[in-house]
Image 1 (cartoon, rainbow, N blue to C red):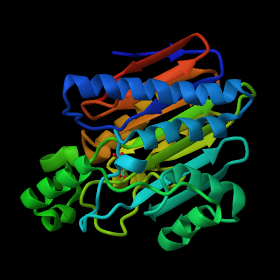
Image 2 (tube, protein in one colour; image 1 turned 30 degrees about the vertical axis):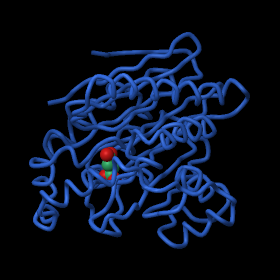
Image 3 (cartoon, helix red, strand yellow; image 1 turned 90 degrees about the horizontal axis):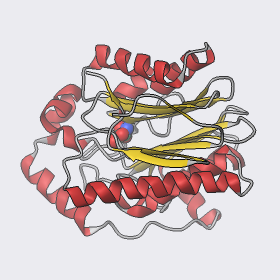
Length: 319
Ligand code: ASP
């Protein structure tokens, strides 16, 4: 188990979603490999002269392209069997943020979120309006839904009374924890001390059409502030939104707590309110401490800095 890590900046940390990760050994190896590649890609973006924002976009794009995670190509399906993706990004230098929710068209929702942040006056765009920007900005469209995802959807709708589940969020988790998983996120600290954070997801399996999770909402799925650090969250989005999880963690870092202390406190508080098997968070503080904390069985993650690239299937687990 990983406890404390510290690096000289630049640093990038990525995660592949809090959950049970009930997969075979071969898939585990691939997951860690893709996560390492994503962290490396973010670090290289910085070493080529980019900033923290460019780093998190680069990392998240690798994960969205892989088809292995619940983001971009591999996004899970809603109750009607449709893709509706959420993504968000924040620049800790300016506190500017951008998010898109329930989008269907881009291959890389994180690019769309960045466009909202950098090219519009808004913070959050949803559905049709956000999807229109895909053509306007010449973004790559999402390829067809992979066979693996379609098969899982058929299996889930056959076996699950989803309407009953949606009445109580915690029931959803108790009975079918695997329905929440594999979301992706990234946090970066660049050479100038700028922090950025990002998240991208297809949401939760069989969600009600139109449901928006934590991933496009600043302070929930991601938050960054150069005064303290940055954080990206994963898990049952509703619990993350209700606890303003990443804002909570970053606020603690601004007050002087380390990334590790802040993440433990944030996940402990969320666990106290909503129970275990609900969420996870990765973070970097401005002093270069990296943390990965979750109350789920697993949360694969990887981090990259100049002298190392490491990955593991879990960080610090809170029970
Ligand atoms: N947080 C995501 C959501 O609720 C799901 C996940 O992290 O797996 O949309």
